[in-house]
Amino acid sequence: MRCDRRISILAAALLLTACGSSDGAPLDGGAPLRFERDPEAVALMKNDPCWRREKGAWHSSVGHCREMSPSKRMTGVFVLTFEERSFFPNKTAIPDANDPLRFTHEIELDYDAVGKYAPASAASENGDAFLLTFIGRRTRDPYSVDCQGLPQYTTVVDRLISARYIGPMGPFDVERLKALPTTVSVRHDGRLGELEAEAVKRCSGRRSASSN
Image 1: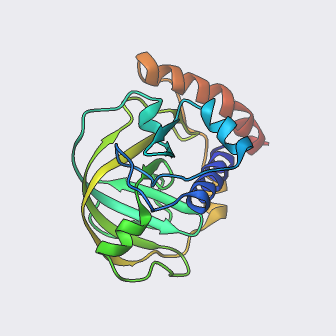
Image 2 (image 1 turned 120 degrees about the horizontal axis):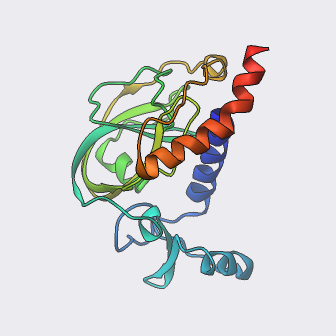
């Protein structure tokens, strides 16, 4: 289910933020380097293609393990909450808290750097929105499609140009999310079509349950 996937994404984002460090900048953008000494954690990172050694530390990025689109200048809204790091490409205003595109696009960047450019504290009850301009790359292909047919991407920030706090987010209605109908279908060829077919199969049980 889309909601289950979002919970997993948020948990992963929290873990990365908690374990990361801003003591060193990565060679290719994204999240800060992680200085890890725990042998068990290091063993796991060595076997994960998304992790690699940089500057005597470890760096995790989707750019290490997936094909990426060419780097270019981008603008969009970054939503930061205690459990969320969402990105709305090409948006310039605060998104609707229940926008269907919310949680469909992840972003890798140094969150402390955003705070430097936007000194307003990101501590609103429902999260905060920042307008970003940066040089970055997006995953070439989506890594999944949700039950509404929306593809899931990740953008890596190579170089942050500017960040501006634009205001607090409104309240998020999780029940509204759970009630979204299953509308995915196979509409494309190639990799996207394959992911749509996987989503149709994965979401068919949700469609049946909602119709009962």
